[in-house]
Image (cartoon, rainbow, N blue to C red; front, side, top):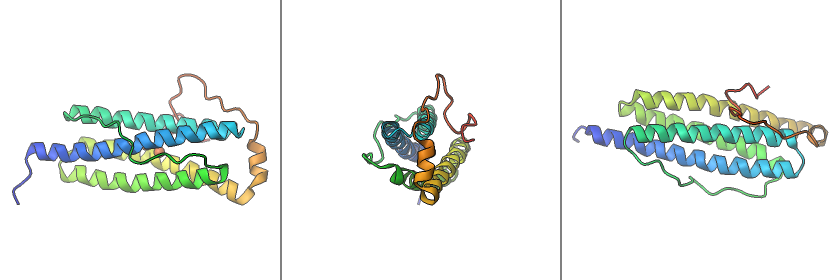
Length: 179
Ligand code: FE
Ligand code: FE
């Protein structure tokens, strides 16, 4: 097989960047749907954190788009999958933990594609974003554990807490919101 041309290599990187961007766009819509639900159920603190994580995913979607444009590609506006609606508070956090876990696995594969196609800049972008997905995974896992172990006692403590995140937020992973 002939060595791939520069253009073929660039297209291979653009393809995985767009797959990743579609996953971010899905995560944004999924987490927005959940934070409205959590707010309606009056679990304000959880709603606020999920909103900040959705903002992180927006930042990721933009980082991928910027790189796609630098490479001469067209950033997708498609979602990787449909959004699951009407989840209750018990199912949201294990679901999100799995979503982040699948994302990390996929991005590690995409990073490898970038490495094989000689694009170290995009490798670094994936490395940065994978670190943030791990922070999301840890948070979702932590809350899923609290709900599983403490149940109503934990949820009663959250009920009625404020969901406000303030203006001009940097999201979750880079603003020390994990505490
Ligand atoms: Fe993300
Ligand atoms: Fe994430």
